[in-house]
Length: 449
Image 1 (cartoon, rainbow, N blue to C red):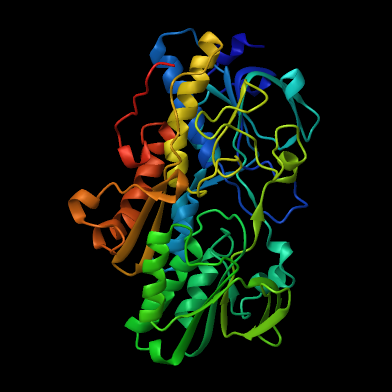
Image 2 (spheres, rainbow, N blue to C red):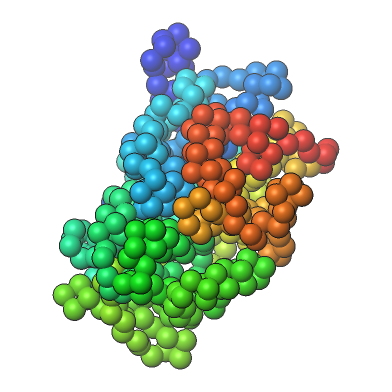
């Protein structure tokens, strides 16, 4: 059937069962889980950059040599959900049909969910029972957002009058704005779970935007804002954490650390937290913004590819699997010890593409190495943003400090990067493999291996 792949414009390359590069993308979550939205940023970016490198090398390429396994209908720009929760964007503006972003027929699309990995036989199995084989495998499934782990949360999110919302779902990010805009007085509680989450700054970004909205509309004195987090500090990087804590104190925002949300009672308007000593503490709320706990998907955690924590076990510099040399991973589902953000993925994708394509050609990876770069654009109010950038070891590495000064100081230029430039660059250039994060349109160059 392969002759029809190039002969017919709209023929599907998904009929192939073997691919040189097989990419496990975002929506590979069975319907019995609570993860409401696909990931996909890592997979779609990696696919396009790998394709670009192969085609520019002049090496033979057959349509369908690269394939993505992803059952999603829509591809979301998830960093934009904070903007939706702040009343700055409409959520439908921040998604595209996934099929429209896949460069068919060059990249095949298996619109299915994955069931299992079989790296010893270089194969995977989908939920329908189809076996797909590969020369190289890229695992980029994102992570699982566990809404059901907090008792009462799914029910509260479904209730328009509950006062409970979350920007961690397409279905509920606009509810956050509705609740924030409607609140006139009372207690507003913003939570962050203990452990690893995607974009660890987002729980307080939405809080700062709500605080500023209430201040600008004359409601600030009538609303007590509290940040209740399962983490020991405001942020993982000491430099930014100290500045954020100073901002919290200056603005009169309460801070409770080491408290992990466990349950919600919407009828009583109370939230129950587990304290560091194992006890429970209940807090009243009028508005409650919840960030659910997160972790690896079960189909990754229970596979031969996972480390002890359940993430895809890869070398932190090369992104190559530690046991299976033809397997690579990037993004939120990987074991890379850095903050899980879209900015991190824009730095990881060129490294993975370089090393994988060199492996395909020579049997050895290239000289590309990832330094752990990640960024968290910390909205601190309307028209202001603290741009946290750092590498492995929680070491700040700031792009604009030499031009605009220490990035610990909020600046309007960073705000408009977050609000306007990044969403535009994502859909117009990143998904086509032409945007490289902090390097913009400049393709990174790497030394020979």
